[in-house]
Length: 502
Ligand code: ADP
Image 1 (cartoon, rainbow, N blue to C red):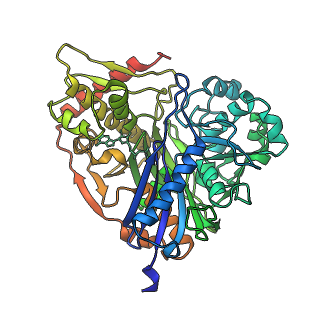
Image 2 (image 1 turned 90 degrees about the horizontal axis):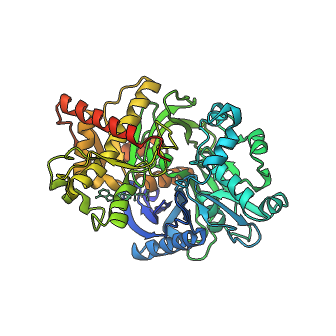
Image 3 (image 1 turned 90 degrees about the vertical axis):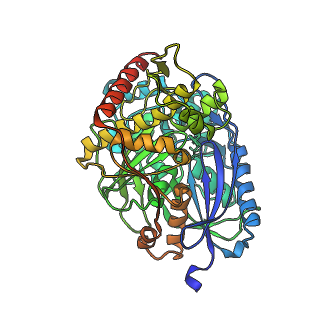
C-alpha cells in the first residue's frame, strides 16, 4: 500500500524540552525522543534559553528517534516543526551565532517598554491590526528590548547582518543549511504572535515596525503553515527530507485535535494552559481579554483564525512545588499526594508568577497562597496547585462563551498534565461539562506532522485527520452545583488578593 508507507517526523521544540516524534499514517507515534534544556533565570521575572543548546538538542533527538525506531531516512516522507511561541532569538546571518540568549515568552522584562510603546492609546493600541494587547508575552517587544540593550545591535541589524526569529525560524534556518543558504522563514501562526504582523493581510506591518524601531530586513519571510519550504540538509537529520510544516505549539495542538471546524476548541495543559477556539476564516475580536490569532493556513487556502485564552502558569506551578519548595519529588507524584486529602482545606494558590494572562491581563499581579490555617498540610497545597489550573481554565472558558456566544458542551484536552486523573475530574466538576482526552496525547507534535504530511500528499485531506482522531478517556461532572459555586467564589476572592502586588 504505497499510500500509507513511510512516516512523518515531527520536531516539537517546547518550553521545557525538545522532542522528535515519528508518526505513522494512522497518526500514531512509532518512536519518540526527548531532551530537557536549561531554564535560565538571570533576574526576577527574566527567563532565558540558550538557543545553541536547543538546536543541539533538536539535532540529537532527531537523530536518535530514527535510530531507536529503526527507521531509515528514506522512509521519512516529510518533517514538520512546532514550537514554543514568542520566544525570541537574534543571530548572525554569517555565522549562526546568537547575539544573546533567547528571551522566553514568560519573561517580563519588557513591562515598562510595553507601556511606552502603548503611549496614550494604552495596551490596545495595535489590537485591531494584530489581535493582541501590548504585553510582555509577545515577541516584538522582546526584539525591541534586544535592539535597545545589546551594544551595537541596531546598527548591525540595519546593515543586514542579523536575523530575528521565533524558535521555528531559528530551527528552520539551521535545519536547512544555516549560514550556507538556510531558509529564513516563519509561518503565519508564529508571525501572529510577534505583534508585528497584520492579521488580515498576513504581512509584516510597516507602521508597527517603524513605531517599534525594528529594521524589517531582519524579519523572516512569512509562509503558510503547510507547504514544502525546502529540504533538511543538517548533518544528523534525515537529509533531503522536505521541511513541510511550521505551526506554533498551540495552533499545532488545535490541528492535531482535529478542531478544524468553527466552534471546535481544545485546551492544552503544559507549562501554561492554552485554550483555542477555531473561529473560521474571519478573525473575531475579543471584548473579554482573549487573543485573536491565526489558527493555521494550508498553502493556497484562506487562513483560519482562533480566539485564544493563554494562562501563563499551570504545569510550571507543579514544577515549582517540586524544584523550589521540594513538596513533591516528581510532577507525577502530585496526584498521589493530592489524593491524600479530601479537598483543598480552604487553601488556594494563585500562581501569578508573571502577572495574570487571560482573561484578566494584570501584569501587576503576583503569586499568593491564601486560606492558610494550622490544619493545612502538603496534600492540601499540592491539591490547591492542581486546582489552580482548573479554576483558571474556567475563567477563560467563561470569557470565550461571552465573546463567541457558543456554549461549551465538552472540552477536548491534551498536554503533560492530562495524565492526572484527579485534575481532570476536578476540571469536569468545576466546568460542569465532560472533559475528553484523545488516544494520542502528543497532539502538538501530531498537528505539525499532519500539516507536513498534508503538504506532501501523505495524507490526502483534513478528513484523514478527523478520521484518525480517537477518544481515550472521558470524565463526567459529579460535583453538586452549590459546591461548585462556593469553590469558584472562593477562588475569585483569592485572585483579588494577588492583584496590585508587583
Ligand atoms: P511543555 O510542552 O509546555 O513543555 P508538557 O506538555 O510537556 O509542557 O507538560 C509538562 C508540564 O506538565 C510540566 O509543567 C509538569 O509540571 C506538568 N506535569 C507533568 N506530569 C504531571 C502530572 N502527573 N500531574 C500534574 N502535572 C504534571
